[in-house]
Image (cartoon, rainbow, N blue to C red; front, side, top):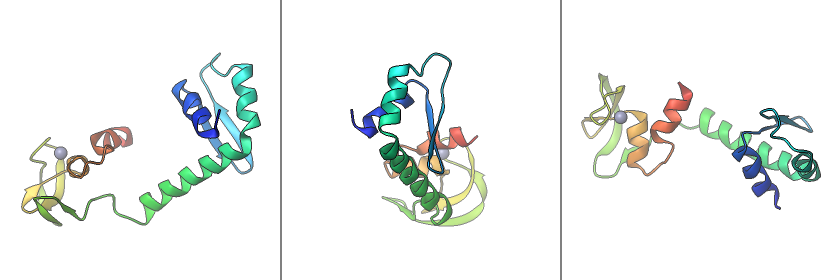
Amino acid sequence: MSALSLLAKARDRGIELVADGGRLRYRAPWGVLTPDLRAALAARKGELLAVLGGERQQFHQQGDCRSPWPESLPGRGPRRIDCYARCEICGRGTWVRYGGTARCLGCALAARGDSRGHQALASEG
Ligand SMILES: [Zn+2]
């Protein structure tokens, strides 16, 4: 089993894997992390750490250096900031307009075909 599919399998079961320096840390619901799975994870530790490290880097690049807002929406136009209004699709508050149409981040991402959409917003609280 590759490191990636092992990681997917672990997450599927609710196991959280965290790269902590050179160590692989687990947080798992009781009884989920079987000896077999633990051994498989340990055997792939180096690869898993590399994968987890890469994910974190990607997250920081997206979060810190780039606005998550699309610069423009197809058929709508470029982004601009205006007075606070309700998103015309879902009713969330937003300052952003695309071609004069109020859009929240979730609807803007959805319009770009980005599946993060409202799910991402929901998980951020
Ligand atoms: Zn919306």
